Structure formats: C-alpha cells, structure tokens
Image (cartoon, rainbow, N blue to C red):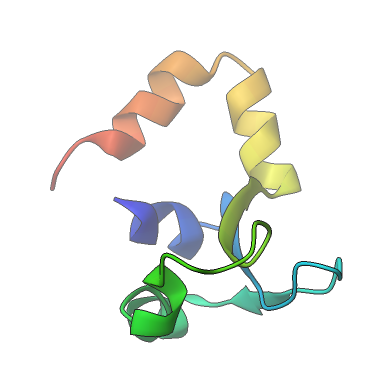
Length: 79
C-alpha cells in the first residue's frame, strides 16, 4: 500500500539512523523493499527515533487538505 503513494510523490519515506540526530536518508521507490525488510530496522532494542518514518510531500499534503476523502481513498483501492 505504501508503494503507490511514494511512486506518485505523495509520501516521502525517511530512514533515521541515529536517535540523537535529525538527519535522515530519503528512501526512493526502488529502495523501499530492501529498506523495509532489513532485519536491523525491526530490532526491538533500537533507541526511540531510529527507524523509518513517512511524511507527506507538498503534493500529498495538498491532496489531503483539498478534500482528501475521494482522491486519497481512490489511491487506497487495489488494482
């Protein structure tokens, strides 16, 4: 479900590697599978703030704010 949102530029996936830092790496469509299946990402002893986060892009925020129910839910349907 995440892939279409990233592919359409509505959501940006960020990987945070250090809890004490605001730095992140943006994960593109081609890197999502490898990033999300990395066992280190799902380790239960990670510090809070390390891992993956998703944020709206400007385009995604515009869709969401502009009556998101129809447009956004249409993207959630399976093809």
